[in-house]
Image (cartoon, rainbow, N blue to C red; front, side, top):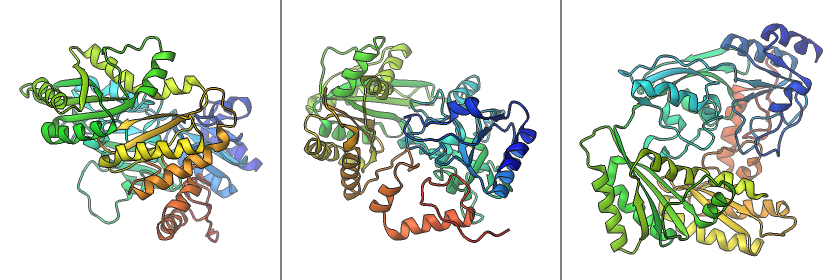
Length: 473
């Protein structure tokens, strides 16, 4: 054990190795449910240093835990054993020049998503990934969890936005897949395999990302819907009516709105009517000649005539549009500030959203009468963040976490959906995956893990149960 620990500071320099109390900020996950003190935290400055760290840890049989912004919700970026080294990519933050002709840009894995957005603004280009943690989430972590976000139904998830990758493998070798082409059928699609692998197959160090032109105009509306079924019906109409201009289709409930307004006093709700369900709609176009306001106003009028929309308003400025989005994006924060909560990351076919929420509510109230249910998420792709808060004064809420999670996972599976829509499995959902996915599927994943990491040193205990083959050394 002493040999690699003495070697790593020499490899990384004084800024690159943290131990003891200096390593504590990296130790626990965002929800403070997972993580033990590692041997230390390696903070490499480049790919060569990442490779050297991985090689030294492999030779010593130490676990390696890749970490980006550590904003994940399933405990996948912290150590579960003390003989582990966390590899933080936080110092690898280089952003290359964008290539408008190719619609691409090369970045290091430690780049914060919000910093990438800011860097692209002067060029009239955008990276269409938006989520609540974009001020701290890093590109490597977004790739590792195959992040989705609020615009995934139009632009795809992270695997659809990655053109090329550079990855340090479990033995310290480097795979150079930094190609800037969309079409590359020279065998297995390795770049997509690392998207969603949560650092169990290797450490992503650089990526070539797919860019899009920044829209020249946007039209946004905040709507009060009669119920969840009405939101689904109106969403179906919008997809047909607005087509390729539909860029955002988000929903949240009055439970979540109430908590957000209670705990975040700078939030502003700008409609006179309150309801059980709210819909945030956004249209966008690269042409200033497309009548987006007319399209959205016409859709809103149709929704009211059909009894689907109770009230609504179009944003009359960029500031008002930003206020609409904050109402949706602050849903998790409002509930966090309320106190205890349980998070469930569900996806079902979009047409089944209302049925899932109704059936899920019955299951949850059977487990704990009066539980406060806060569903919000992405209507366009069927992703429901089905979060729960206890009735006021309830004890042992977390003691029922397993019953809630299993009931909702089973319901999602029965509806042809997933219990892990965009947060990944991490450490939290391995047993759930074993119960709700077929044996063949889980064994194939274990075989992939074993093929890429035969010693089982890359983020052990994440995504699949530990599997090790014979030491090839």
